[in-house]
Image: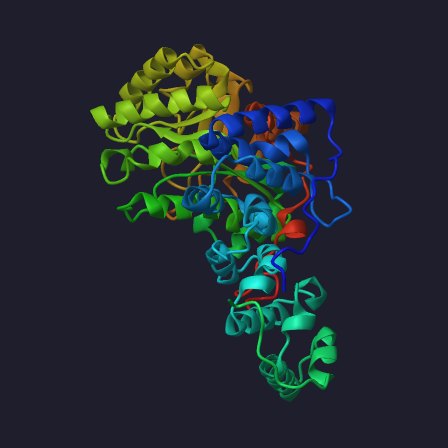
Amino acid sequence: MPPSGRATLPTPLPLTPEASAWLDTALAKIAADPAAIRTLFPAVRRHCGRAPLPDGRTVDEAARALLLAALPLRDQPLVDEVSALHRYGDPAEQRAVLRALPQIDGGGTGRFLDLVRQTLRGNDITLIEAALGPYAAAHLPADEYRQAVLKCVFCEIPLAHVAGLDDRADAELVRMLSDFARERTAAGRPVPEDIAPLVNRVRPFTTTPGAE
Amino acid sequence: MRIFDPHIHMTSRTTDDYEAMYAAGVRAVVEPAFWLGQPRTSPETFYDYFDSLLGWEPYRAAQFGIQHFCTIALNPKEANDPRCLPVLDELSRYLAKDRVVAVGEIGYDSMTKEEDEVLARQLQLAVEHGLPALVHTPHRDKAAGTRRTLDVVRESGIAPELVVLDHLNELTVGMVLDSGCWAGFSVYPKTKMSEDRMVRILREHGLDRVLVNSAADWGSSDPLKTRKTGDAMLADGFTDDDVDRVLWRNPVTFYGQSGRLDLDEPKPDETSSFEGNSIRRGGE
């Protein structure tokens, strides 16, 4: 499966002239001095807004993706700078980094996977959802991907929001979800409806792709 | 009565407190970064603390209908520990964040040379980031410490209306208001300031540039002291509008100078929620 998922071409953002000017200046500053992103990245929402976009992102997430794309860095320096933005980011900044991973890692190396793993250890469901996009689907090893899906079921993230399920759901995941459903039923508690299509589907055991 | 508590350490408080605060009228709080009782020994634990002030705590507050903002700084006590000083090098990242509405708490604890330097440097950061500054005045030798703080504030070049000196009392309020800075009062069960003394100070010095907070934390303190002060004001003959000015409009004016006090912002709960020991689901 290719590492790219969501369309990454920058569509024109609905920005006021002031916001647009701020963004242009920010992009130029980062192109000239990558360290400038450390205080520009957190300031995006105040200048560009946070309205939802048709592609499911918000304006600030799309604008932050542009800032990341403007970084004149490659290889380890790029990994270090992006990882630090995530480390020091508030939840909105972290979501923006996670959603931009397919673009930043254009070569599909999976070298930002640690950011996904850190997020999956956390408790913020908006971050977990942002982490389980096409990048995770392409790169997470099978056992981690299954655990991530099960975690979504536990914290009531709709499985429709998880990338790659059609390709990556395997017999072992189906077993885990079936056991979960039995446990819930035995406890007299409701079973989330969206696991039914997975649990009920007849599918031969497969090896999982993508974990190169 | 709508209440904005401009200084409270919710990290140390329970969900019962949040419920009681909401019932008392509290709709917004500012949580200043401060020391935690147990001294920290490395910069990384500060970053985790700052992350909590920007992530987990606004989420908790939103569950109870309360907007949560914070101030970020290296506090004066830990400024004396060389192991903590690298925090200063990362502050600019945090001071750029949406919910950070001031640099703070800065100021003096024991009035050491190290505290001098860290206070001056962080006042410069406030100037660079266009943020107000929340300045703690020392508990020991308070009057001398307040005078010395005002000197450092003056030397820094920051506009006095961007600075609040906190934990004031009868002996320090006059010099602070004369300087053009804001005067903060922490109403406590036993120490610092009481509701009745607070009312007398308001009678004597007026309602301009005054902030009343509970400064509730991990010690003996009471997150409802803002409400109790409002009640004491009414009992003394102040009007509802006076109370609203002190307990809501004044803090909104002061922190609004940051340009980041977005009180209409959707609650973090709408965009962010936490799983696991979920508060909302009763600890399931």
